[in-house]
Image 1 (cartoon, rainbow, N blue to C red):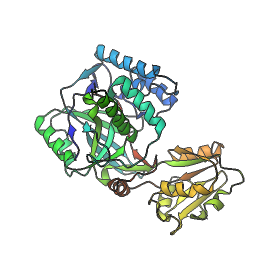
Image 2 (image 1 turned 180 degrees about the horizontal axis):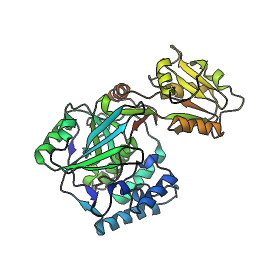
Image 3 (image 1 turned 60 degrees about the vertical axis):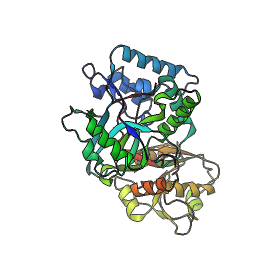
Image 4 (image 1 turned 90 degrees about the vertical axis):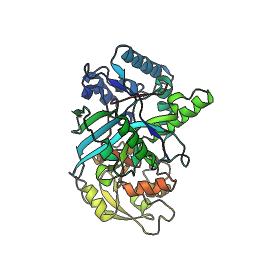
Length: 397
């Protein structure tokens, strides 16, 4: 079973800066414009070090510069170190269906293990490019800058995390999400949290690249004879409960499909193809009711209802079904895209030949695949909203 420990976190001095000004979304949902906006808000926003190489420059210089910036922040007192602690963290938000929700978890140091070894269950494959960027950054900074997101079936974990008499820091982001954070320093509560998490496997919900990068770095440090804090990774553990989790789909853009290929005809062996209703805010509800994916072309849209016998041996996921069905499209590329409106815009502009709107994976599907030791295709799940980076950092020196 997993080991989960408190750690001496590095945190911004909130007497000097406002936490809303120096925290940021995860690196993988930030583009160049977002990065510039965050740095305009505050020049010492965490994005300066968490996304030091937005242009993909070859070489180590951006990562070395990120490490130098962190050293300066520590020397200047902008970052201070706590006694070993757990960190409570909550997000309150309105789900896309209009339901008010909150997601509450605890940040700690989760001992690293490979699948099948120590009770850590990944559910999704990763892509090599993102891992190399994260590994370069980890080597240079020797810090966990953001948390892996883990799910635990430990009943009552949320109650253990709730603030008792701790000071709670609360702020809101530009998307209307209210964030709260507090330090859990009481030894008895720390022991209870560690025992609760350690009694069950942990499923990785989000942050597979960070987890696999941390494994690679740990192995490097073991070979060098100096593993230090690399044996664990900073992880936000959330009690596994449907009412705490919102999972959104990541849609697909089809690029480079030949002009002579009729997409409805090519996909017909796999799906029953029907005209789709207009794409609007009700499309997700339509997909759930009709049991379909939606093919978006520039001049029309189609419901894709999976044929009962077409996907024998294929996982019960829209991403897996589409991966199987794309075999009949000829040479092409796939781009992952969040948001129906962005899919529609990129198809309309000609940046993609077509888009495919997927249904979200369910928590039950994620658990079933993780428990079975299998993986979903890359970019199958998008947990919403995303925890902020910069609330707490963890040294692995």
